[in-house]
Image (cartoon, rainbow, N blue to C red; front, side, top):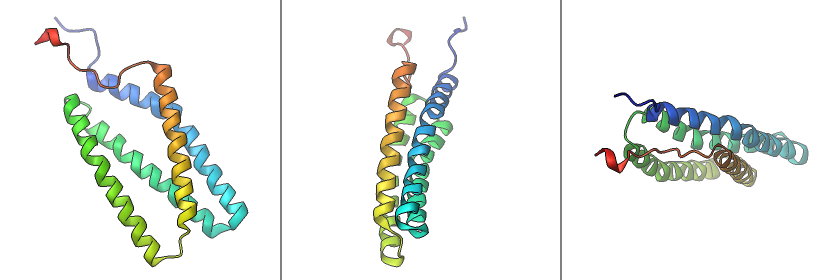
Length: 147
């Protein structure tokens, strides 16, 4: 007999979409506010560095969304494993990118770092608040009773 419960991938994708729709505007506003503040206080060059920071945050979380979309029909263990491998690779990649930029350009890394931190924290708070309001588990593990 077919279960009336939707497939894990469909349910997880719907939940992910809900979390993104509810948290992205807050993170985007925080990043835009940083760019505007740096534009007013320090000029266009620093504002571009802040915009670069927003781009790093978009890349960092965008890759996670891509992995979740690619593994939506796989078992939850595959998804979690992919995300656990993905995270340290992204951290090393971004650290290497920032090191290369710091040694070869005049990009204001302080503005970039502040924007990354502010945008990430506001985005994480937005996702957390959205997840608490939705009250749904992202990963649905199979029942132990079903074998």
